[in-house]
Length: 426
Image (cartoon, rainbow, N blue to C red; front, side, top):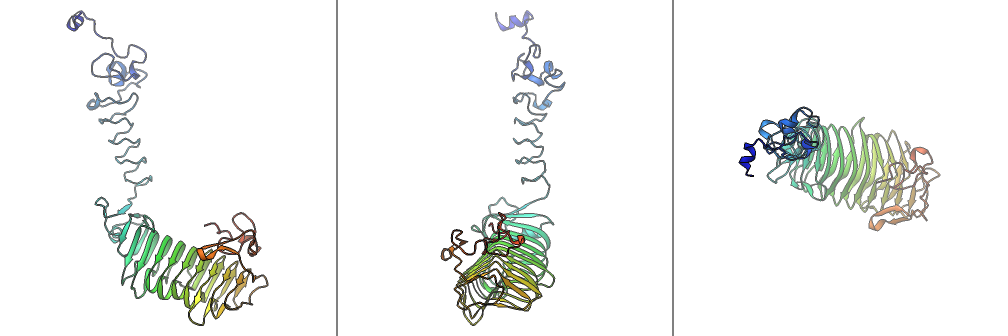
Protein backbone atom coordinates (compact mmCIF):
# COMPACT_ATOMS: atom_id res chain seq x y z
CA UNK A 1 0.00 0.00 0.00
CA UNK A 2 1.39 3.40 -0.89
CA UNK A 3 2.02 5.91 1.88
CA UNK A 4 -0.58 8.37 0.56
CA UNK A 5 -3.24 5.68 0.58
CA UNK A 6 -2.26 4.73 4.15
CA UNK A 7 -2.80 8.29 5.40
CA UNK A 8 -5.95 8.62 3.31
CA UNK A 9 -7.43 5.65 5.08
CA UNK A 10 -6.70 7.22 8.46
CA UNK A 11 -3.98 4.73 9.41
CA UNK A 12 -1.64 7.24 10.98
CA UNK A 13 1.40 6.06 13.04
CA UNK A 14 0.64 5.64 16.75
CA UNK A 15 0.95 8.75 18.87
CA UNK A 16 4.12 9.18 20.90
CA UNK A 17 3.47 8.49 24.58
CA UNK A 18 0.88 5.77 24.09
CA UNK A 19 3.29 2.91 24.70
CA UNK A 20 5.55 2.32 27.74
CA UNK A 21 9.02 3.80 27.20
CA UNK A 22 7.96 6.13 24.37
CA UNK A 23 9.00 9.23 26.31
CA UNK A 24 12.49 8.05 27.22
CA UNK A 25 13.63 6.01 24.21
CA UNK A 26 15.27 8.86 22.25
CA UNK A 27 13.10 8.11 19.19
CA UNK A 28 10.48 10.00 17.18
CA UNK A 29 7.79 7.33 17.49
CA UNK A 30 5.08 9.25 15.63
CA UNK A 31 7.40 10.73 12.97
CA UNK A 32 6.32 14.31 13.62
CA UNK A 33 9.84 15.73 14.12
CA UNK A 34 9.53 15.83 17.90
CA UNK A 35 10.53 13.14 20.33
CA UNK A 36 10.39 12.20 23.97
CA UNK A 37 9.46 15.09 26.28
CA UNK A 38 9.49 17.56 23.37
CA UNK A 39 6.45 15.83 21.88
CA UNK A 40 3.01 16.95 23.02
CA UNK A 41 2.13 13.35 23.68
CA UNK A 42 4.82 13.08 26.34
CA UNK A 43 5.20 16.60 27.73
CA UNK A 44 2.49 16.12 30.37
CA UNK A 45 3.41 12.55 31.19
CA UNK A 46 5.10 11.27 34.38
CA UNK A 47 8.44 10.77 32.62
CA UNK A 48 8.59 14.44 31.67
CA UNK A 49 7.35 16.15 34.81
CA UNK A 50 4.57 17.79 32.90
CA UNK A 51 6.90 20.02 30.83
CA UNK A 52 9.03 19.87 27.73
CA UNK A 53 12.80 19.75 28.31
CA UNK A 54 13.62 22.17 25.46
CA UNK A 55 12.61 25.61 24.34
CA UNK A 56 10.76 26.19 21.09
CA UNK A 57 14.05 27.14 19.46
CA UNK A 58 15.53 23.81 20.49
CA UNK A 59 12.67 21.45 19.72
CA UNK A 60 14.59 19.65 16.99
CA UNK A 61 17.83 19.21 18.95
CA UNK A 62 18.83 15.53 19.33
CA UNK A 63 19.80 15.65 23.02
CA UNK A 64 20.37 12.51 25.03
CA UNK A 65 17.26 11.24 26.84
CA UNK A 66 16.61 13.06 30.09
CA UNK A 67 19.21 15.81 29.50
CA UNK A 68 19.33 19.43 28.38
CA UNK A 69 17.24 21.55 30.65
CA UNK A 70 15.73 24.07 28.31
CA UNK A 71 18.54 25.67 26.40
CA UNK A 72 18.87 26.11 22.66
CA UNK A 73 22.29 24.53 22.23
CA UNK A 74 23.44 21.20 20.91
CA UNK A 75 25.25 19.85 23.95
CA UNK A 76 24.14 17.16 26.35
CA UNK A 77 24.61 18.75 29.73
CA UNK A 78 21.95 20.05 32.09
CA UNK A 79 22.77 23.73 32.28
CA UNK A 80 21.92 26.80 30.26
CA UNK A 81 25.25 27.72 28.72
CA UNK A 82 27.08 26.59 25.61
CA UNK A 83 29.84 24.50 27.15
CA UNK A 84 29.89 20.85 28.17
CA UNK A 85 30.32 21.13 31.91
CA UNK A 86 27.55 20.90 34.48
CA UNK A 87 27.56 24.35 36.02
CA UNK A 88 25.61 27.46 35.12
CA UNK A 89 28.33 29.78 33.95
CA UNK A 90 29.88 30.26 30.53
CA UNK A 91 33.40 29.05 31.24
CA UNK A 92 34.83 25.55 31.02
CA UNK A 93 35.50 24.84 34.67
CA UNK A 94 33.18 23.03 37.04
CA UNK A 95 32.45 25.72 39.58
CA UNK A 96 29.54 28.12 39.74
CA UNK A 97 31.22 31.49 39.54
CA UNK A 98 31.87 33.74 36.56
CA UNK A 99 35.64 33.63 36.33
CA UNK A 100 37.99 31.18 34.67
CA UNK A 101 39.72 29.65 37.65
CA UNK A 102 38.82 26.53 39.58
CA UNK A 103 37.60 28.07 42.81
CA UNK A 104 34.10 29.13 43.74
CA UNK A 105 34.61 32.83 44.34
CA UNK A 106 34.31 35.66 41.85
CA UNK A 107 37.73 37.15 42.54
CA UNK A 108 39.72 37.72 39.39
CA UNK A 109 43.14 36.06 39.16
CA UNK A 110 45.44 37.96 36.84
CA UNK A 111 47.68 36.01 34.52
CA UNK A 112 50.94 37.46 33.28
CA UNK A 113 52.32 35.93 30.08
CA UNK A 114 53.59 36.98 26.68
CA UNK A 115 51.59 34.34 24.82
CA UNK A 116 49.10 36.83 23.43
CA UNK A 117 46.28 35.45 25.57
CA UNK A 118 47.02 36.71 29.09
CA UNK A 119 45.65 39.98 30.41
CA UNK A 120 49.11 41.38 31.17
CA UNK A 121 52.61 41.10 29.83
CA UNK A 122 54.37 42.52 32.90
CA UNK A 123 54.07 41.74 36.59
CA UNK A 124 54.01 45.45 37.45
CA UNK A 125 50.98 46.06 35.23
CA UNK A 126 49.13 43.21 36.92
CA UNK A 127 50.06 44.55 40.37
CA UNK A 128 48.88 48.04 39.46
CA UNK A 129 45.51 46.71 38.30
CA UNK A 130 44.98 44.37 41.24
CA UNK A 131 42.74 44.53 44.28
CA UNK A 132 43.47 43.29 47.79
CA UNK A 133 43.25 39.53 47.99
CA UNK A 134 44.06 38.89 44.33
CA UNK A 135 46.40 36.16 43.17
CA UNK A 136 48.59 36.89 40.16
CA UNK A 137 49.76 33.84 38.24
CA UNK A 138 52.88 34.30 36.15
CA UNK A 139 53.84 31.90 33.37
CA UNK A 140 57.35 30.64 32.64
CA UNK A 141 59.72 33.27 31.30
CA UNK A 142 62.00 36.11 32.34
CA UNK A 143 60.33 39.13 33.95
CA UNK A 144 61.33 42.63 34.97
CA UNK A 145 61.50 43.92 38.56
CA UNK A 146 58.33 45.14 40.24
CA UNK A 147 57.12 46.97 43.34
CA UNK A 148 54.20 46.34 45.70
CA UNK A 149 52.99 49.37 47.67
CA UNK A 150 50.04 48.79 49.97
CA UNK A 151 48.34 45.94 48.16
CA UNK A 152 47.62 42.54 49.70
CA UNK A 153 48.63 40.07 47.01
CA UNK A 154 49.86 36.61 46.23
CA UNK A 155 52.18 36.39 43.22
CA UNK A 156 52.86 32.88 41.99
CA UNK A 157 55.40 31.90 39.38
CA UNK A 158 55.32 28.72 37.33
CA UNK A 159 58.37 27.39 39.22
CA UNK A 160 61.81 28.64 40.19
CA UNK A 161 63.40 26.52 37.47
CA UNK A 162 61.48 28.23 34.66
CA UNK A 163 60.25 31.60 35.97
CA UNK A 164 62.83 34.32 36.55
CA UNK A 165 62.75 37.89 37.85
CA UNK A 166 65.85 39.67 36.59
CA UNK A 167 67.09 43.13 37.48
CA UNK A 168 70.34 44.98 37.06
CA UNK A 169 70.84 48.14 39.12
CA UNK A 170 67.42 48.02 40.82
CA UNK A 171 66.03 45.66 43.44
CA UNK A 172 64.23 42.78 41.77
CA UNK A 173 61.23 42.79 44.16
CA UNK A 174 60.43 45.78 46.39
CA UNK A 175 57.74 45.68 49.08
CA UNK A 176 57.14 49.18 50.36
CA UNK A 177 54.04 48.31 52.37
CA UNK A 178 51.14 45.87 52.29
CA UNK A 179 51.17 42.09 52.35
CA UNK A 180 52.94 39.94 49.80
CA UNK A 181 53.14 36.19 49.37
CA UNK A 182 55.73 35.37 46.74
CA UNK A 183 56.55 31.92 45.40
CA UNK A 184 57.70 30.03 42.34
CA UNK A 185 60.50 32.30 41.07
CA UNK A 186 64.25 32.54 40.66
CA UNK A 187 65.24 36.08 41.63
CA UNK A 188 68.39 37.98 40.68
CA UNK A 189 69.81 41.47 40.33
CA UNK A 190 73.36 41.67 39.06
CA UNK A 191 74.62 45.11 40.11
CA UNK A 192 72.32 46.57 42.73
CA UNK A 193 73.88 48.99 45.21
CA UNK A 194 71.49 48.04 48.02
CA UNK A 195 69.25 45.01 48.31
CA UNK A 196 69.54 43.03 45.11
CA UNK A 197 66.87 40.34 45.30
CA UNK A 198 64.19 41.51 47.75
CA UNK A 199 63.76 44.58 49.93
CA UNK A 200 60.95 45.08 52.45
CA UNK A 201 60.55 48.55 53.88
CA UNK A 202 57.40 47.70 55.83
CA UNK A 203 54.39 45.40 55.72
CA UNK A 204 54.31 41.62 55.85
CA UNK A 205 55.87 39.07 53.54
CA UNK A 206 55.78 35.32 53.07
CA UNK A 207 58.57 34.16 50.79
CA UNK A 208 58.59 30.49 49.90
CA UNK A 209 59.64 28.12 47.15
CA UNK A 210 62.11 30.63 45.74
CA UNK A 211 65.72 30.62 44.58
CA UNK A 212 67.96 33.69 45.03
CA UNK A 213 71.07 33.07 42.96
CA UNK A 214 73.96 35.07 41.48
CA UNK A 215 72.85 38.33 43.04
CA UNK A 216 75.47 41.07 43.28
CA UNK A 217 74.97 44.07 45.56
CA UNK A 218 74.85 45.11 49.19
CA UNK A 219 72.47 42.36 50.37
CA UNK A 220 70.36 39.67 48.74
CA UNK A 221 67.27 39.87 50.97
CA UNK A 222 66.86 42.70 53.45
CA UNK A 223 63.85 43.33 55.68
CA UNK A 224 64.01 46.54 57.69
CA UNK A 225 60.39 46.78 58.76
CA UNK A 226 57.36 44.55 59.27
CA UNK A 227 57.07 40.80 59.73
CA UNK A 228 58.51 38.15 57.45
CA UNK A 229 58.22 34.40 57.00
CA UNK A 230 60.89 32.81 54.82
CA UNK A 231 60.73 29.08 54.15
CA UNK A 232 61.71 26.54 51.52
CA UNK A 233 64.10 28.99 49.89
CA UNK A 234 67.59 28.49 48.44
CA UNK A 235 70.30 31.17 48.49
CA UNK A 236 73.26 30.19 46.34
CA UNK A 237 76.17 31.72 44.46
CA UNK A 238 75.46 35.24 45.67
CA UNK A 239 78.26 37.80 46.09
CA UNK A 240 77.38 40.75 48.32
CA UNK A 241 79.23 43.22 50.49
CA UNK A 242 76.92 42.99 53.51
CA UNK A 243 74.46 40.13 54.11
CA UNK A 244 72.89 37.33 52.14
CA UNK A 245 69.91 37.56 54.51
CA UNK A 246 69.46 40.56 56.80
CA UNK A 247 66.44 40.82 59.09
CA UNK A 248 65.91 43.60 61.57
CA UNK A 249 63.02 45.69 62.85
CA UNK A 250 62.07 46.67 66.38
CA UNK A 251 59.21 44.64 67.86
CA UNK A 252 58.70 42.59 64.70
CA UNK A 253 58.65 38.82 64.23
CA UNK A 254 60.69 36.80 61.77
CA UNK A 255 60.56 33.11 60.96
CA UNK A 256 63.17 31.39 58.81
CA UNK A 257 62.75 27.67 58.20
CA UNK A 258 63.90 25.07 55.68
CA UNK A 259 66.28 27.46 53.99
CA UNK A 260 69.59 26.49 52.37
CA UNK A 261 72.49 28.94 52.15
CA UNK A 262 75.30 27.56 50.01
CA UNK A 263 78.30 28.89 48.11
CA UNK A 264 77.66 32.52 48.99
CA UNK A 265 80.20 35.24 49.72
CA UNK A 266 79.34 38.02 52.17
CA UNK A 267 80.43 39.88 55.27
CA UNK A 268 77.69 38.06 57.20
CA UNK A 269 75.77 35.24 55.56
CA UNK A 270 72.83 35.60 57.96
CA UNK A 271 72.41 38.66 60.17
CA UNK A 272 69.53 38.87 62.65
CA UNK A 273 69.22 42.15 64.50
CA UNK A 274 66.32 43.69 66.43
CA UNK A 275 63.04 41.83 66.71
CA UNK A 276 62.06 38.29 67.58
CA UNK A 277 63.50 35.44 65.54
CA UNK A 278 62.76 31.78 64.95
CA UNK A 279 65.63 30.39 62.89
CA UNK A 280 65.02 26.66 62.69
CA UNK A 281 65.91 23.71 60.46
CA UNK A 282 68.21 25.56 58.08
CA UNK A 283 71.51 24.60 56.45
CA UNK A 284 74.49 26.90 55.90
CA UNK A 285 77.33 25.23 54.02
CA UNK A 286 80.33 26.13 51.87
CA UNK A 287 79.90 29.87 52.33
CA UNK A 288 82.74 32.37 52.72
CA UNK A 289 82.46 35.29 55.12
CA UNK A 290 84.59 38.06 56.57
CA UNK A 291 82.58 38.59 59.77
CA UNK A 292 80.18 35.73 60.60
CA UNK A 293 78.28 32.91 58.97
CA UNK A 294 75.43 33.40 61.45
CA UNK A 295 75.18 36.46 63.66
CA UNK A 296 72.66 38.04 65.98
CA UNK A 297 73.02 41.48 67.42
CA UNK A 298 71.36 44.12 69.58
CA UNK A 299 68.22 43.98 71.72
CA UNK A 300 66.59 41.06 69.95
CA UNK A 301 65.46 37.68 71.21
CA UNK A 302 65.96 34.52 69.24
CA UNK A 303 65.52 30.79 69.00
CA UNK A 304 68.14 29.09 66.85
CA UNK A 305 67.42 25.38 66.80
CA UNK A 306 68.15 22.36 64.64
CA UNK A 307 70.41 24.02 62.11
CA UNK A 308 73.55 22.76 60.37
CA UNK A 309 76.64 24.90 59.78
CA UNK A 310 79.20 22.95 57.76
CA UNK A 311 82.40 23.93 55.97
CA UNK A 312 81.89 27.67 56.10
CA UNK A 313 85.17 29.54 55.67
CA UNK A 314 86.24 32.85 57.17
CA UNK A 315 88.33 35.18 55.06
CA UNK A 316 89.31 37.30 58.10
CA UNK A 317 89.58 36.69 61.82
CA UNK A 318 85.95 36.24 62.75
CA UNK A 319 83.33 34.02 64.38
CA UNK A 320 81.36 31.34 62.59
CA UNK A 321 78.48 31.91 65.01
CA UNK A 322 78.17 35.16 66.94
CA UNK A 323 75.39 35.50 69.50
CA UNK A 324 75.96 38.66 71.51
CA UNK A 325 74.24 41.79 72.83
CA UNK A 326 70.84 40.12 73.13
CA UNK A 327 67.87 40.34 75.41
CA UNK A 328 67.54 36.56 75.42
CA UNK A 329 68.18 33.61 73.17
CA UNK A 330 68.69 29.86 72.84
CA UNK A 331 71.08 27.94 70.63
CA UNK A 332 69.94 24.31 70.82
CA UNK A 333 70.16 21.09 68.81
CA UNK A 334 72.53 22.42 66.13
CA UNK A 335 75.43 20.75 64.32
CA UNK A 336 78.47 23.01 63.81
CA UNK A 337 81.11 21.05 61.93
CA UNK A 338 84.26 21.64 59.85
CA UNK A 339 84.02 25.42 59.85
CA UNK A 340 87.09 27.62 59.62
CA UNK A 341 87.08 30.77 61.76
CA UNK A 342 89.07 32.45 64.47
CA UNK A 343 86.23 31.73 66.91
CA UNK A 344 83.71 29.02 66.26
CA UNK A 345 80.99 30.31 68.58
CA UNK A 346 80.87 33.59 70.45
CA UNK A 347 78.02 33.44 72.95
CA UNK A 348 77.05 36.42 75.07
CA UNK A 349 75.78 36.27 78.63
CA UNK A 350 72.12 36.51 77.57
CA UNK A 351 72.25 33.47 75.29
CA UNK A 352 72.10 29.79 76.21
CA UNK A 353 74.04 27.27 74.12
CA UNK A 354 73.46 23.59 74.86
CA UNK A 355 72.64 20.23 73.24
CA UNK A 356 74.73 21.01 70.16
CA UNK A 357 77.49 19.11 68.42
CA UNK A 358 80.74 21.00 67.68
CA UNK A 359 83.12 18.90 65.59
CA UNK A 360 86.35 19.38 63.69
CA UNK A 361 86.20 23.16 63.48
CA UNK A 362 89.35 25.23 63.18
CA UNK A 363 88.91 26.44 66.76
CA UNK A 364 87.70 24.47 69.74
CA UNK A 365 84.52 25.58 71.45
CA UNK A 366 84.41 24.75 75.15
CA UNK A 367 81.65 27.06 76.36
CA UNK A 368 77.95 26.56 76.76
CA UNK A 369 76.09 23.86 78.64
CA UNK A 370 77.32 20.47 79.73
CA UNK A 371 75.23 18.62 77.15
CA UNK A 372 77.14 19.82 74.09
CA UNK A 373 78.85 17.07 72.10
CA UNK A 374 82.25 17.03 70.48
CA UNK A 375 81.88 14.04 68.20
CA UNK A 376 81.70 13.32 64.49
CA UNK A 377 78.00 13.88 63.69
CA UNK A 378 78.14 11.17 61.02
CA UNK A 379 76.03 12.97 58.46
CA UNK A 380 75.40 10.83 55.38
CA UNK A 381 77.27 12.80 52.69
CA UNK A 382 77.59 16.53 53.39
CA UNK A 383 80.05 17.04 50.53
CA UNK A 384 77.22 16.06 48.17
CA UNK A 385 74.59 18.02 50.04
CA UNK A 386 73.12 15.22 52.17
CA UNK A 387 73.07 16.50 55.74
CA UNK A 388 70.84 13.85 57.25
CA UNK A 389 72.45 11.96 60.11
CA UNK A 390 73.17 8.26 59.77
CA UNK A 391 70.69 6.89 62.27
CA UNK A 392 72.65 3.67 62.72
CA UNK A 393 75.84 5.31 64.02
CA UNK A 394 75.35 9.03 64.62
CA UNK A 395 75.79 10.31 68.19
CA UNK A 396 73.33 13.08 67.26
CA UNK A 397 70.39 10.68 67.27
CA UNK A 398 68.08 11.47 70.22
CA UNK A 399 70.72 13.81 71.64
CA UNK A 400 68.78 17.08 71.53
CA UNK A 401 67.04 18.99 74.27
CA UNK A 402 64.85 16.40 76.06
CA UNK A 403 61.91 18.77 76.48
CA UNK A 404 58.91 17.50 74.53
CA UNK A 405 58.76 20.95 72.90
CA UNK A 406 61.69 19.86 70.73
CA UNK A 407 60.55 16.31 69.94
CA UNK A 408 60.86 14.95 66.41
CA UNK A 409 57.72 14.56 64.27
CA UNK A 410 57.42 10.92 65.36
CA UNK A 411 57.35 11.97 69.02
CA UNK A 412 60.85 10.73 69.84
CA UNK A 413 63.52 12.85 71.46
CA UNK A 414 65.05 15.54 69.30
CA UNK A 415 67.76 14.58 66.78
CA UNK A 416 70.46 17.19 66.29
CA UNK A 417 70.70 18.88 62.92
CA UNK A 418 68.38 20.25 60.26
CA UNK A 419 66.14 17.20 60.09
CA UNK A 420 65.34 16.95 63.78
CA UNK A 421 62.74 18.62 65.92
CA UNK A 422 59.05 19.29 65.27
CA UNK A 423 59.82 20.84 61.86
CA UNK A 424 62.34 18.23 60.79
CA UNK A 425 60.35 16.90 57.84
CA UNK A 426 61.15 18.92 54.71
